[in-house]
Length: 212
Image: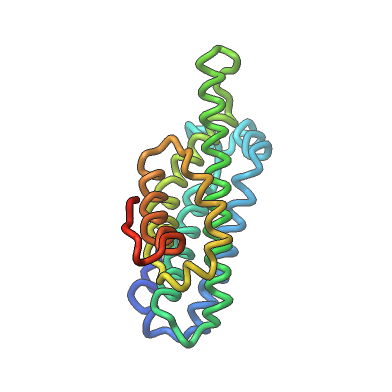
């Protein structure tokens, strides 16, 4: 509820809020996201909690997946909006660097986990392994993060002003390329859109026809 309240506040009042207030809210959102992420990655503790009866009626392990995803979404949306608006009352260069770093981390982590899911599915099909709590949680994590990667990260990078993207292309490109092999068509399509709009103009001279 608190994250939802912050999201509503930022969407409705971000333009009117001083940059210092926006940055303060971003810090709070990041702390919420990091707390949830640290808890969610500790599968051993979550399994132990369930065995002790904590939220035992749940089908899945106790977790803060919703908190992590919503905090991540709000933080990214706010940073993308500030960068695209070229706000002068925030440390824009620092904020942009932070945004790009978070995007690349999310893309790299998602690509790694997605490939783990694919690998496990192949081994399961061969009868080499069976479903486990860890494998089920991994699949849930990937399924929950996919909309964030597609609708927030990839669309946000696609919408960045070309000069801004160009400044950080060296950081974005390696993480972006890892998503080319994604089994999800919607992810590959998002990557293709970025390559076409942001990368192609950097490698194809303006006087040459665009064949992408």
